[in-house]
Amino acid sequence: MPNWETVEVETDLLICGGGMAACGAAVEAAHWAKKHGLKVTLVDKAAMDRSGAVAMGLSAINQYVGLKDGENTIKDYVEYVRNDLMGVTREDLVASIARHVDGTVHLFEKWGLPIWKDAEGAYVHEGRWQLMINGESYKVIVAEAAKNALGMDNIHERVFITEPLMVDGKIAGAVGFSVRDDKFYVFKAKAVIVAMGGAVHVFKPRSVGEGLGRSWYPPFNSGASAYFTLRSGCEMTCQEVRFIPVRFKDAYGPVGAWFLLFKSQATNAKGELYMQTNKDELQKWGPYGKVKPVPANLRNWLMMLDVMEGKGPIYMQTADAIKRISDAVEDPKARKKKLKELESEAWEDFLDMTISQALLWAATNIAPEEQPSEIAACEPYFIGSHSGASGAWLSGPEDLQTDATRDDYFWGYAHMATVPGIFCAGDASGASSHKFSSGSHAEGRIAAKAAIKYVLDHPEAPSSNGALAETLKEKILKPLDVFQEHKDASSDPDINPNFLKPKMAMFRLQKIMDEYAGGVSTNFTTNEHMLNRGLELLDFLREDFEHLAAEDHHELLRCWENVHRTWQAEAHIRTLLYRDETRWPGYYFRSDKPDLKEDWKVFVNSRWDPATGDWEMSKKPIHQIF
Ligand code: SFD
Ligand code: AMP
Image (cartoon, rainbow, N blue to C red; front, side, top):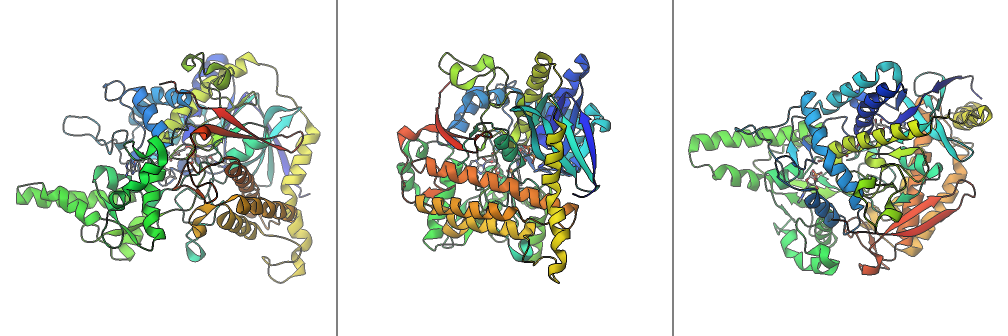
């Protein structure tokens, strides 16, 4: 084993991740910890200023309910989420976040985030729930507040959480390693908040070759949350509910501002509006085909039908939208000014959050006021905070339970997983979609408050097992040994009969998922036989993981990212197999079960049993609370 130092950190509450949810957790936990003399420690694999999904910034805050101004009610928001997820949502969790999210947004503003205001000083909305921001520095601002709250002595940046530390079946912390120094970390904690985002690069991306690494979801989020919760024996939910966003093609620029703010329309190559020409298809999808707005997956589906019929490319009609808005201004001088304003807003939308899309427009001579621009469905991602729903199965808050829900949805602490002491927020928490950046931060705060309460109720020191930490260290550092032992067997460090480099491992995983689990190359379609074959191939891949090799710290990180992704992949395939219907066409289509079935209006939960290594699948009821 390489001669790396072991660093032990003992704390009360450990926050894994440094993104939106973790920053929310840090601010709240610091407040309560100070009152009770507790220690809170945060670990991020990257640098918090620019880590996670908000690294490049964002152009909108997508969840703002507007409760104080009476704009909307909690019930309105719950209904919106329920409809968008084809009826599958935990209303207690959605409401728990919705009732706190406005307070989080007001904190962002207080910390210096510029939110657009109109002449009367009211927030400028993109859509009913979304606010426009100048968000290039969004993450820097939110991270600064978290760092100030916790203090840098309690924050470990560039440390990759690799494995939960489970002693006698109980959570005792986590282990990980520095991605720069020869240091292995053992964090001992009484409670852990899992907030390490969702997963990308599980499926083969559209961007391959020179474009590899360009994806909608940030390449740094690689399934650590799902891995952590699965490996510690937590029950998971909605592992079949992947998210496929439609984005400007090849650079993955956002479409929300175009559809909602500019009221732009999308067409096929012939200029036909697929949302209108294919609208009869909506009748097939039960009550969800009739709701407004049309659920995200069904919007995708109507577009995909045209693509599958060979009617692509699909275009966002940007020029028409800009013309329609500017033409409405009567005075010619004011109209010219409006046009300039719209042009600059169009570019800023990308510059605030997806700079590469602005570069691609510039490189391919796209002027949005003059011509349309291609959009396409991305490869699938795992993200519990946007329009997907995958994550851990959590207890809701007590006060939102009814007699009907209490037994199914409540076990003591708000937003705690089924393993006591593990709390989840943001992309790590399931069945509470549409929380986005603001709701993830709010959920981090809720989980942190509950986690501190848990620590106060369970003050005993975390269980300890030094031999276990040493075994984990040996296992985690093994790819470094494998490389050193065999590197001279060939003249190319990447090609060697004795080992598998992490990039090759990733390509193999992506090929399996793409071809068998409904990726881009099968038009997101799969069936029982393909899924079973995918599972078989995942087993073979796992066997070869014994031979993963890492040349340096960076490759060691890459090795473990792929191990994490593979667990996310397996949970996904198993859940796709279990659900006996197609509920989310546009996200995935089961060709052997092509219809929605009302008796499958249930959550599908899954759990890997750490004691036996077996997977358990179950159905859980959906209760309508609002
Ligand atoms: O519109 C480890 N999202 C948007 N939300 C909005 O409110 N407005 C927008 O404009 C948004 N747009 C958007 C969004 C997401 C993405 C990917 C794009 C565009 C391109 C959604 C939000 O960003 C999202 O809901 C939240 O960020 C979720 O928060 P959280 O905390 O669950 O995830 P994170 O912020 O990505 O942070 C993850 C952290 O974990 C770290 N990490 N740390 C230690 N060890 C490991 N093994 C780790 N693995 C990961 C990461 O470094 C990071 O700190 S729009 O276009 O949709
Ligand atoms: P996006 O840029 O696609 O992530 O969208 C940002 C926000 O707008 C999210 O809340 C989406 O759910 C919502 N949104 C995007 N497109 C549409 C649409 N066509 N109709 C309704 N809501 C949309």
